[in-house]
Image (cartoon, rainbow, N blue to C red):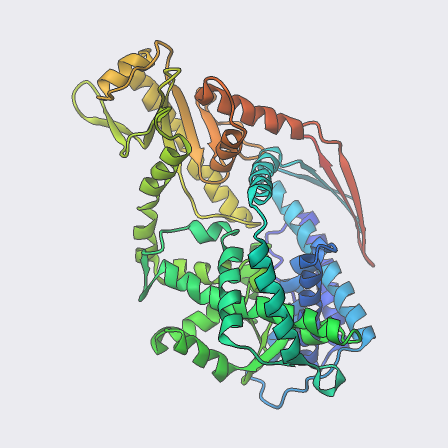
Length: 552
């Protein structure tokens, strides 16, 4: 029922068996009614995410259980034809959906924690056949990076002045929307729209999408297949705009008719051919339609990919048989770009790789904006370092000079694709950035004890630098340091880009290039003092204790 159990540790085996037990029980309960089970689960997921958007809270495990919970049912749909029975969800069905999703989500999370043992980041034990203990360290560097990202986001929101005219426009717009929506049959939802509404929610979707790191993966003009990166994002934004608009219509309907249950109206369905026609009208060539729809649709064929990565499936559609698709909210709200971009990376690899080649210049330009003139100098190009015989030793991607204090930083820039819960992708990023150790060794050998002033003259920089030695930065667009990593050369500062920006936002006084690494490490040190967490998970056939501890 679940994923292949070969090559799993004892702890992973126990967790997988408990998950399989839940899946088999659910399959028996819903035998012959798999389509109704899928609808119930997606409705629960959509309601959970909508509650989170309202700021009420969210059970973090429910969405994590999506792929595992759907596995027993999607495989039975196939090309199942027939009319779709669309009706309200009984209370007992809703209770099943939430409970089942939560159990699957907890086990998915615990499976990932146990799998960390493969990378020497966890210790597991089995005191008995029905008891597993998992000990993992706090992800201190990752927590520090997340703090920096959240702090910058909070600061940006606080500094954004309220636009009373914009708020007035939205109030008027929603009043009109309220007049457009009603509940046929006393429980369903129906509404009309107009071009002003469509345009407003397209803009809202674009702003919502800017909050996701995938949105900056390439410049908008990079070609991926037959369209630009910006056009691919716009296609996602169009679908996201419809989802955000639908969610607001649901809220307005509930204000108009308080007895309406959101779980019955948030999730929509559509005919497969209508959805495909909408993509063609948006400009997608017929030759690309099948592969794009496959990338955006959650079905039995791609469940395992999401399970292996321990990810929430960010699908725009869910397979419901030969003729119909579910149109959920939760996937696009979780990340509107992730599913499509993963498809683009696989389908247009040469184009993707060419786009990656442009990242260094963009990163260097961002560096110049963060360290602007007249206080700093950031040359618009990289530098080649050569041996005495003229042969190339290595590259320096960027240089920063503090004109006031004379500090000079030699910088290597690393911009990898973002990774989420996937342990294999995390390990790939860790290994790749560890290669900077070789760069550090070569740069230090080239510096040869020379001062920043001597290096500035050697590199042809028309700037006064100090007699102090240069500073070495390894700057990653996202994570630069990883829990459990012991091999990073301490002669350089390993910094995440959001961490640098967070320090700069605080407008530090003095020798900024020396202050930044110190402030970043001071922030990280705050997370090393976190108290141990002991979490207990109890299932019918298995008890799991998760201990989150300080890194020893």
